[in-house]
Image (cartoon, rainbow, N blue to C red):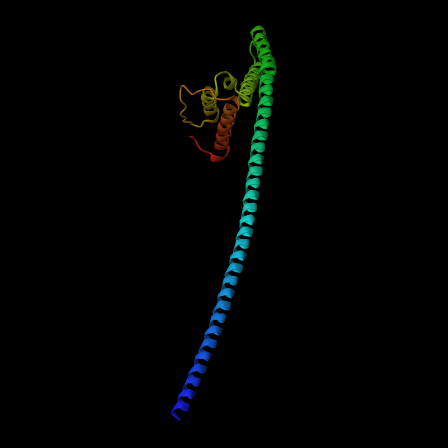
Length: 220
C-alpha cells in the first residue's frame, strides 16, 4: 500500500510537473507573441510617425517656399511701385520745370515789357487813375507770375541744392502766408542725388501747404 501510495504520489507529482511545463511553454509562447505584437505596433507607429513627420515637413517647406515667393513678389511690386513713383515724380518735375521756365522767360518778359511801356506812357502823358491802376495790377501780375514760377520749380534747387532752395522757399512762404517758420538746416548741407533733393523739397512743400490749408496755425 505504501509503495502504491508512493507510486500514485509520484504520478501526481509528475503530472503536476508536466502541467507546469506545459503552462510555462504556453506563457513563453504568449509572451513571445505579445512581444512580437508590441514590437510590430512600435515599428508601425514609428513608420507612421516618420511618414506624418515627412508630410508635415513637406507641407511646411511648401508653405515657406510659397511665403518666400509671395514676399519676393511683394518686394518686386514695392520696387516697381517705387520706380513708377520716381518716374512720375521725375516727369512731373520736368513738366513743372518747363512750365516754370515758360512763365519766367515768356510771360514774365511780356509783363515786364508791358510795364516798361506803361511807365513810358506815364512819363509822356502824366499819371492818371487808370494808368496807376493798370500799373498796380501789372506789378501784382508780375509778382504772382514770379511766385508761381518759383513754386513750380525753384531755380535754386538745381543750382545750389535742396538746403539753399529750402531756405529761400521758407522765407518766401513765411512772407506770403504770414506763418512764422522755424527751421534748422545746416549751413554746409551737402548736395544729394537729384531725385532725393527733389523728393525732399516736394515733401517740404506739401507739409507747409497742409499747415497753411488745414492747421490754421500762425507758426510752424
